[in-house]
Length: 398
Image (cartoon, rainbow, N blue to C red; front, side, top):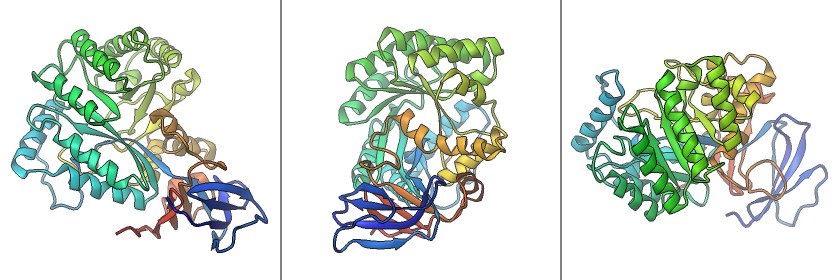
């Protein structure tokens, strides 16, 4: 945390009228005009630029990324199981280092203004808890500037490989923040037992859940109903997130509405990467039902996909494009997916442009929030926990 004072002058918080913002002891101390500042306060002219809160990545896989390595020639089949098996084979052959790769990607995220990250880390019977350990090390290394939540994620399934449940137990005991899950029908082939085991582990460790649900249509809706049943039975209201949830865009309006109503009642939220290749949950219906939707990149340049960059303004743009958001107020909804709503869905506290909150700030040369999403300009300044950590897109940390 920075112990000095910093005054940002002439900035426009979320596009509001220009003001000054004073940072003291790593926190937003005051906002307004003609602020009194302590002796020795550093002054920075914001030049009337847009000021955003630190950006939020609600779903990624830092442990998987090949960012900064030689180009990976992707010749993988189209099925989910093809990608899972190929990744395991690659890891074994390449001796993939989840600690160094996740740290590299976390630093890239910080340079573009992302100060909160929820990242899944693979857990299976071949690598054990190695990826969780690597990500926990990155979490510790980045803790002065970045909040990273680690999700213990059974990428190869929970029941398919004997011993995976015990490894998830170990991962949570090691310090993972969240328990992950995956397609109880399509991957584990025994949805009731898969979810029973998963929810029992979560309850035993008092941890929230973040479940990948790729399953389409009626299959996915069936799994989602089972998840909601167990959320209620285990008293995990407001502690369960569904990542992807493609099925919600792939069932009848009546079925979707009923599921969303129950999700809202139980406080179950969604995270989307807004992929162009899949049907996505209907944003408007989610908003009307009161179901929160955050945004995330999913994997970035890994064995699954060559695409992606650690830039949450770019992901907000993809969300806007996927949902055909054109009006400025609609495009701002996409920005909220990677700022305030993202923080709320993941449970990141102490967030926002409010006096008393942690000073995580991004100065952007844009006229409006919508302009920032569409143009994705290089960030002029990134402040994390009250410390200037990046200028003009370049990280200043050693």
